[in-house]
Length: 334
Image: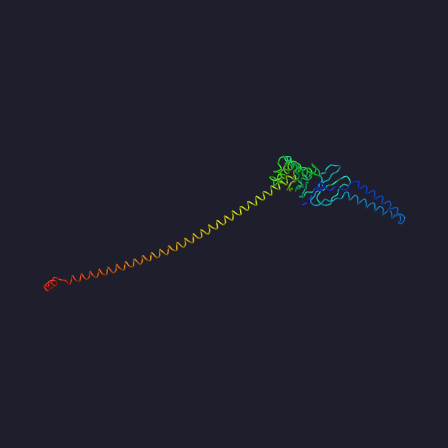
């Protein structure tokens, strides 16, 4: 991307007519002296031939130097004749123009950077500040180059970039306080300038594109700068304190969460142990119940067996104690 610090870098002026006339006079004087010197040692016809060739070569070089010109890459050529802009536009390369009466300028149509320096302005509160450097990245489109040059000359950037940047920055400063210009809206100032420039350019010089604007922090009075630096130092200290407080709170929160995790872990472990103990107790109770049931069953079985034996003995006795036997036993007793 080309870098230009003055609008004159957009064009290249052709050789001046006075310099051409001077060179022409010098070469004629030199030719006259050479002719007188050679006339004493060469044949007159040879002298005339050499003199004609010399004059022809010098004149051809002068005419070529004035008429033949080069348009560099990334530029287009525009031409003036008698102060009037011609309709002719040429592309990069070598071209021919009418010597002495036609002037050419190389107008850049690629992306380029204009540097606007030392821009003073006054804020709404009356404080004088200055922007040391504003860089405007822009591009002139080829299809609009002839119309813009016709309306604003080859130094169109002086009108729409250099002077316009001065005007817009002063307009902005006059409507804002120092705090707004230097702190609050400085981060958006490049976007504001880009939009403002492009809006007016689209109306009055369509075809010129503002791509971006870069700018340095404005210079402000030393006393005010010291105050801002002090405020910035205090803000920095406050941010450090806030960060330290956040760190302490974060550490405390981490410790609290850690304690909660440990407590929850212990609670879970205790619950596991309790469940294990409870399960063991339940198993023991069930075993005891089973053993009791077994004992009851065994006693019940023994009782049933004794009852069955007694019942059988009673039945046997009933069968054995007949009336005859009872009478016999009564007789025996008597």
